[in-house]
Image (cartoon, rainbow, N blue to C red; front, side, top):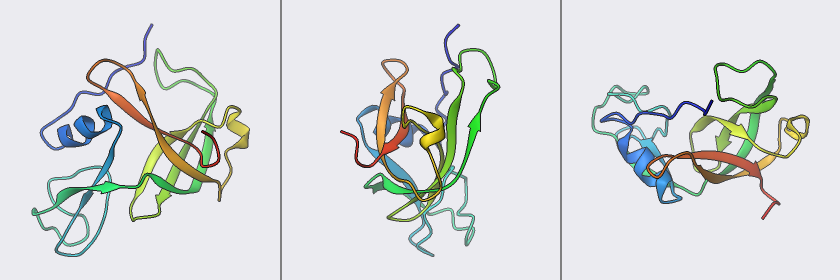
Length: 133
C-alpha cells in the first residue's frame, strides 16, 4: 500500500506548488517578522491575517529528533527519523531527515532540504545531512 498523499488546502496550496518545483517556502508575517509553520489563518505571533509565503534557503539544524519504529499508518516505511529543524532564515519545520541510518540523525546535525515526488502534483520536503550531494 502506498503512503497517504497530502491534500492541499487554500492555505497550504502555495507551499505544495513551490515544493513541486523544488522550492521551500514558509509563512512569514511582515507585521511582526515571524516565520512559522504550519500555515494558519492568522500569524501565531501577532494574529495578523496579512502574512505571506517567503522563500527559505532550506538549510538548518536539527533541534529535536525521534526515531519512529511503529508506522503511523499504511505506506510508511520504518524506522525513520522525524525531527524539528530550526531553519537558518527563521522558523521551524517538523520533517523527515534521511541520513541513511536514522540513528545518524542527532541534535545539532546540519541539514538541507531535498524534495521527493509522491505524485506528479505533490513533492515532500525532506531534509538530508548538509554535506551530502
